[in-house]
Length: 137
Ligand code: CMP
Image (cartoon, rainbow, N blue to C red; front, side, top):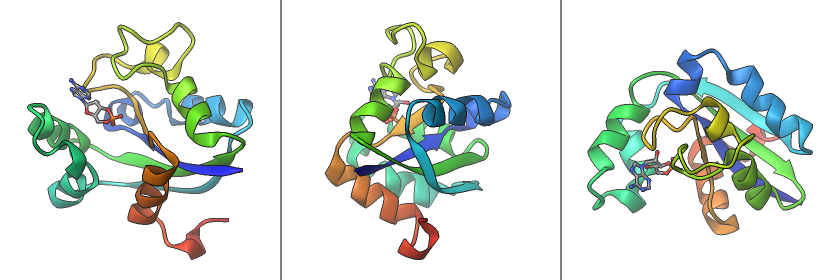
């Protein structure tokens, strides 16, 4: 059993497809063990994506992630980190396999519908960034 962090990004929230995306997780054996909808401020978005702060796309990423509400979730299941990334598809929706969340709901590499932790270690850090232990059931 693993846990991973998923974020439904502002583009997908604005498109009103929160439920459709959550259905992909639940239909594929992942359980939502924590969930909240919130508006990130620039400091929190920058801290969350600190690993990318030297990348040329960092400012656009922070602009985008603070442009509207997001839904943050903890997903639990067997091989949750890998399974979530398979369900999401490639970071760039143009390269994402048909039937993946990004192929079906995303527009561009910036507005790419979802974020998912890329390793078990990062998942632990990203989960504790958003959730207290008492909020995960
Ligand atoms: P995410 O999985 O949330 O992690 C960092 C985000 O930066 C990524 O999804 C993309 O939305 C965004 N991004 C923009 N340009 C790039 C790029 N060239 N490579 C990787 N991520 C990028």
